[in-house]
Length: 171
Image (cartoon, rainbow, N blue to C red):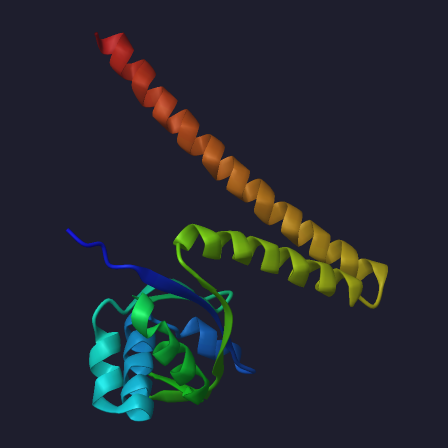
C-alpha cells in the first residue's frame, strides 16, 4: 500500500479589521481557497488540489491557519494564496490577505516553527514598547495566560486522579 505524502502550509490571516479574524470559520476559508485555486489555475488546479486539501487548524484569535494538501500540488496552493484579497462571511466582506509563514512535511514541524515565530514576535513587541507600564502589562498578560494553562493541566490531572481513587475505593 502506498502512503500519500502531504505538505502543511502555516499561514497567517492579516487584516486591519479585527472582526475579520473573529468571523473565521474553517469551512468558509477552505471554500474560499478552493475557489481561488480554481480561478487562478483553472479546472486542473481545482481538481488536483481538491483531493487531500483540508484546513487542519484554525485559530480565530491569532489568525493562524494550517492547511494540508498533497505534496505534488502544494505549489499550486501557495501560488494561489496571494490572490485572496477578502474574506466573505455571513454577508460581510472583510479585506485581508494570507501570509505564508512556513511549509512543512508534518504538523509537528509547523508547531515547532510556530513556537519560534511567536517568541520572536513577542520579543519584537516588547522591544517596541514605549514605556515601562506597557511592558509590564504585556509581561503580566503572558504570565497570566501561562499560569491558566498550567492550572487547567493540573486540574485535568487531579480530575483523572480523583476518578482512579474513587474506583479503587469502590473495589
